[in-house]
Length: 180
Image (tube, rainbow, N blue to C red; front, side, top):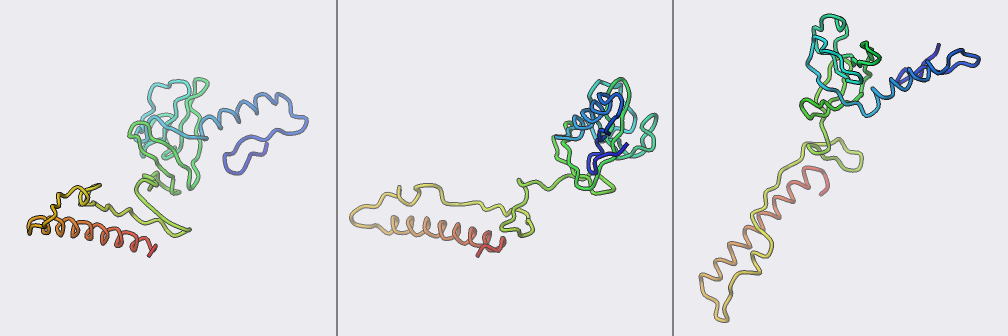
């Protein structure tokens, strides 16, 4: 019987008897491998099986998981079914609320869009945190009388310096992304 290339779903064959079994096997694989979310990624001893639960087998696995390190273990139909991950496969670790990606020999935390930024096909770089010292309407809310006092002028100058610092910080961040 042949399988699909990426998810190894069983293909139906012309004239095949009991096609529903092959079809149901494919549905079980899809259920495990699409929008993959695992209960845990660190267990090396199989837990008590709960129908439908999915795990990434930890390193040094024992029992029925022995020799299945980094594989996906799916408890279905009262037994463990194992799936070999492929490079670039992603899953959500429910235990740690972390997105993970398979590199070919290990599962590693995925660098997500929340921590990286890239533009126009460029390689994403870590985001730069820019803390702005000026808040909305700070300059406009300064009290200025008809006859300017030295204190009022100094307060306006100080706020303008904070604003200039913010503009410099934004310029540096945009420059680090190659945008200016």
